[in-house]
Image (cartoon, rainbow, N blue to C red; front, side, top):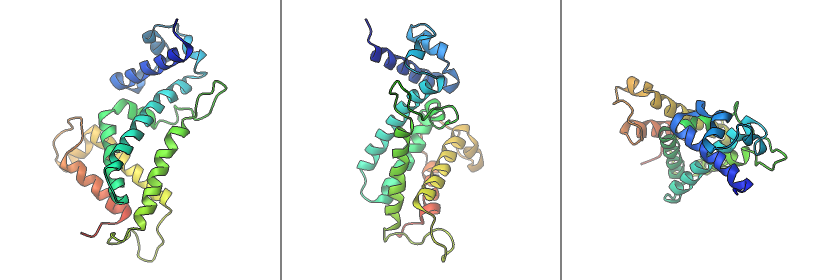
Length: 218
């Protein structure tokens, strides 16, 4: 007989497969239960709300993205290079996993609270990634290789968390507009082909980093 924990994981596995192949709109409780081979009420035994199940599915995405961040950053040395590596991973993940990426940041659909079932809060998977970028930005500002800081010369730089949030918003916009084909239209670039790696994407990411962190002396 299948154990409680294994059935719970199977429900999440089915949700991950659904969002990967059919997008976030496919994640209905009944459809997940049907594909998992259980009654439509079974998911309620493990997830008190639909939002809680969506959050468990989204957490898998954040764990995957976090592992990719760690692998990319491990191959670099300077904080600036680590921010660049993380930025490229972020955009690449968005283009390769569009359904999961859309779900992960729909916090109007997700649930960060911890329930009596012991389900971990989603914030425990999401905030460490953001905090890692905040720490890297703080370290970037201490590097002597930045040609100048962005913004007026006599104005103090915003807190690292604000810069990280603005950088995140820019990268998210690049990923979304590239996926929709809008940036290619504006730049007269080839249509999207799925995986990232084009010169235009690299240039866009580099420009965003220069805007928020200042260009690097050559």
